[in-house]
Image (cartoon, rainbow over all chains, first blue to last red; front, side, top):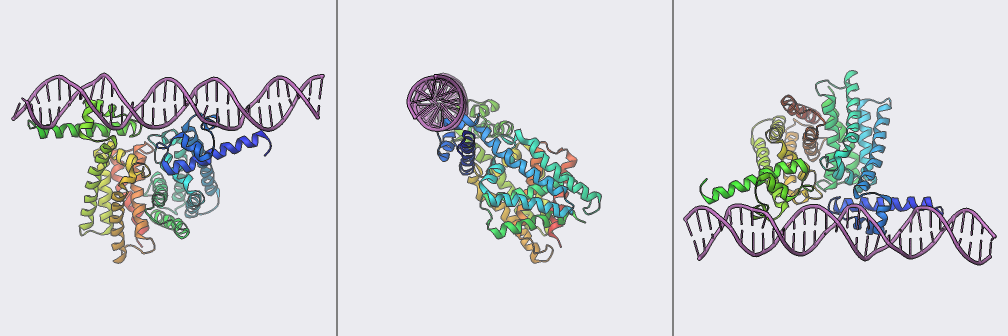
Length: 200
Length: 200
DNA sequence: TATCCTTGACTGACTGGTCAATCAGGGAGG
DNA sequence: CCTCCCTGATTGACCAGTCAGTCAAGGATA
């Protein structure tokens, strides 16, 4: 804590955390860099000491979190569970992420994942990785007979992830209540709905 | 065509159609009003003769199309079909809309529906109407026993519409091929997947 | 211990460019 | 000559990114 390195890292983190709140509140396009600096309680210029551009802040936030999610999906896939249980684990991870930091998930979904023509274009490859891992799970479940083969794995991955993201969006924009009970129940509902359609 | 009213309407329409192409190509935030005027082959100022603000153009495009969609959903619901067939009709309408004018659907999804914190906030009520109509279909199917009651109608509506939008997004961002065969097949796949989960 | 040097974290006023929106006026139809 | 449709140069606000400089901490030297 007395070392300069540690202090530096802390300010960087402070700026990133402030950016999450500002992006969530005002949106990436509508907020100013000075809003982030103010929220972080830091001079305007310091933002540019740690980041080369406004976009780099959003980049960093997205990549940090998305890599954790890809790791979680890979771990679920590597386990010896049934396909249904793997998909449950993925839904659980994403929903728990939302519970833990709703602002961060809002920013990632609204500003990156669902903004694929402006900002998310840069990250399409990363986003695609998630789909591919999920469709791999479905494909293997079809091969061993636990899922029927009429529905393509790629389509199933789109439906599964799309369903999760839409439920999160419903909470984010207050179309649906997001109490602890609802979050927990949503995990089951998503897996029931999608796997119900995929299983024989 | 010789009457002033008709000529005026035509220019207005020309601007709206040009805006669809520009918004689809560059995105709402990144395009300039002059890009729209150029694309329409019209003077910059004329845009402000027909619209009070840049946002009003997007507003108009969204409301025009969304009202058509709400009418289509209402019509499907009013028919004497099964819930599964009603949902198929809705999926069909949306996918055919995409086939007929992919640019317009891209703009509506990317710039309005999925941008609910910036632009879509204004239209949340309109968007919610669609969900409510769909959840009504599900609720009545549950009441007559054709859908099971474990999954709430609100959740089912979110899952159903989210699934459709995600599939369209996959086409829009070229994550999946969008040939005529795929479009046709997607209608069935969506209904199979979601209704498969909702039916006993 | 006292003095000087170096480093880099930190500051915020400023600039350059972009773009939405305005407005003064031209021309055609009636 | 009045009313619209139409034009495009101009204006004024806004904001990302720059930069010249301050300050505090650490290390070296004597």
